[in-house]
Image (tube, rainbow, N blue to C red; front, side, top):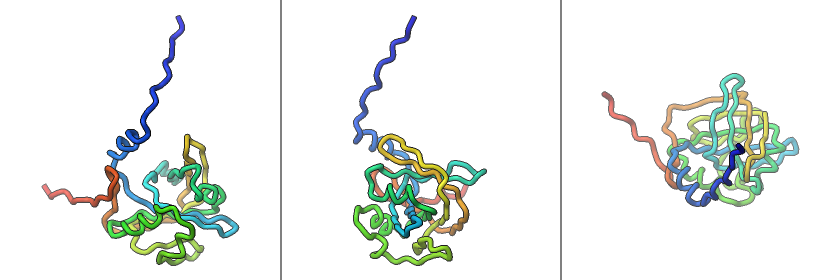
Length: 170
């Protein structure tokens, strides 16, 4: 007897986005720089850890995004996990506009990587793998250096920014 497989139902993209928005995430700004000096930076909440050994992280970028091609050619990435004081930085890098880096305060680390002020955590990474997945590219990167502070995170939930409320001590 042959099993009959039914085609999966078509999901409403807006309803899917709202449902996935029930998962609270941190917010990052991820920058990439190519050997030719092209540099992009985007706000992403798709960031997550993959592996401790080797130390790998991932994030995704829409395939049609201008930044996608630069990320594909990048020689390194910098991930800034944003603190609760950085909502303006999150909004700035979420906009579709050219030359985002010319209009926001930043410095450079010893290797020329982007350094935004006020971060909660910062990871410098090298490319490991790029995978096409639906309408996005998934970038997996190897962490080569990192630092963090004891500040509080900026969170995203239900389509808006949130802050972390400490739990009362028992």
